[in-house]
Length: 314
Image 1: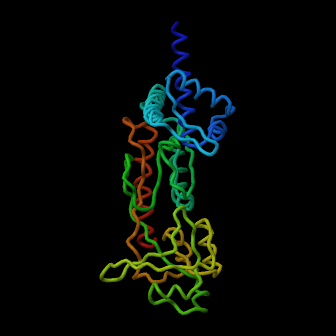
Image 2: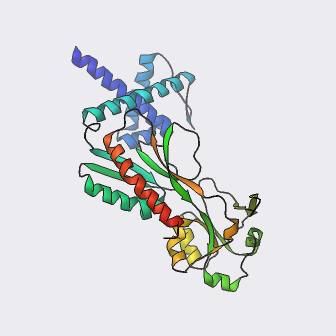
C-alpha cells in the first residue's frame, strides 16, 4: 500500500515537471528532448494528469501551446512544489550542512571569461567537493526556470524576487583605432559620429541609437547610428574596432587591454553616460545551500576588487 502511494506521488511529480518544461520551452518535442523521453510519453503524462484533475491545463493548436486559466494556477503551484522538493533533496544530501554539490553560474561571455572564470578556478581549488557549471551567455538567463544558482549582470535590474548584491559600476566607452582616427576627423560631439564608420553589436534588444550625456546639464543625447558593420558578439565588436572597421561602443572591461596598450583610443569621454551597475543575483529560496553561500562570500570581494582596478585604470 505504501509503495503504491509513493509511486503515485512520484508519477505526479514527474507529470508536473513535464508540464513545466512544455510551458517553459513551448512545445512537447522540446520538452521531450530536454528530459530525454519520447514526445509520446510527455503527451501521455500530461493527458493523464488532466484526466486525474478533471480539468484542461493546456490548449493545444497546430501553431502554439497555451495554459488555460486553471493551467496557469496549477503550473504556478507545481513550480513551488518542485522547488520545495528540490530544496528538501539538497538538505537531505547535506548541501545545507556541508559545502558540496554542483553550482550553476551564468555571466556575460566576455566578462565571464576575463573575470568570473579566474575567480571560479581559484574557488574550485579550495572546495574539492563543489563542482561548477559556468554558462557564458550575453542573453539574460532566467535563474529559476533554467535552474541557475547565481548570475552576474551588468546594467539596471528589473523588479524581481531575486536577491541582488552590488559589485560596482562599469563605464560604456566609445573607442576607435588610432589608424582609423588618422584617416578621419576626431569627433568633437556625439553627433559627429554620423560622419564616421561605426561597428554595432546586435543585442537581444537592439537600438539604432547610442546614448550620451551632455556635460554639465546631464541631458541625454541620442545619436542614431547607421553601422558600416553589425556583429552579434562583443568579441567581434572589439576585433572589428582593432581592424579599423569603425568606431565601436563597448563596456570598458571589453576594451581595457587594447586601451592600455594604445591599440584603441577613447572618444568623447566627457559625453559618456552614467556607468552601468554590476550585480551578483541569486534566487531567494529560503535557506541557502552552503555551496552557494561559500561561493558568494568568496567571489563578491574578488569581483569587486577587479571592478575597482578597471575603474582606476589598473
